[in-house]
Length: 422
Image: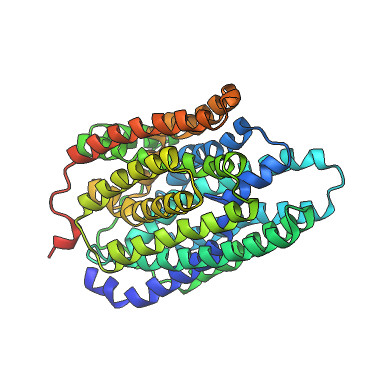
């Protein structure tokens, strides 16, 4: 079966790379976005509301995957489902861009945005586990990391292009409603075009006939949770992976830290910071993915070590160069996590169909994943009178949390890695 998958490797790698290239053009607007936090701040959002953005996304990808996992459990071929879910996910961003063209009352912008973002997060949550299972299924075990690195490389190149575009738009038109409307509309259109490119992928049936399941939603979810909780090595991995949420939270706030207290221009934070984030991701995709340097465990541990360096830079060297360096390191960490997450879950999974594992994994970390960004934002509001020191306190707390994730990452057993499988 793996040899047959390798036959279609170039086709599948190219197809998903095209999908992610178009999605990458829209990501700097809506995900891990410095543009988004400044856009919200300029429209009157508090730090607490800005902290809700990553929390809403994390809740969406933690709860709704359970539903899609259950509904697709008897569909062996998931290509069409993946395509349809991506198309639906793109519509909320597109419609919000259209809304900004016609809105007269600016007080409606924040409510409309959060409605749009909730819908986007819901749809992404439904898409997430099916898409991840689809990716690890279309590539062989040996070429899984390589295939994903090609995909993410295309995505991150597109992110850099989009970030430069955002710099020019914001520099020329500031954060006017018209310019913001065009940015959101273009992002939605890119998502939609990219989604259609799943048509070109080739998904092969499993080598083993899967039984038709008639269990209820609650039984299906309960059985998966119990199976995963009993997998101690998987739990160690998930605890070690919590640094991902810390980095995502820092990305959601550090641009305001830079612009409010250290004289960084809005257009620089909205565009150049993101360029460096995605440049870091590209380098990680090339070195750790395409060239496959380091073992899977060392790749995993490297994200924690670099996250510690990032936080130290933000605390002690909050200069223009320091912010660019921190952006690059966070991008490297995010890029590395992106290419190893799916193979790691697949590695620890005890099933042929990994959709359930991808659905439940975020649920097991939902309290921390959704709670930490809100806590971060609430503390910034609570201690705003301290100025930049309030951010440094939160970065220090983040530093301590990442040390804990490093310990769990070290304790995780990564024996018999994919790259060594004959």
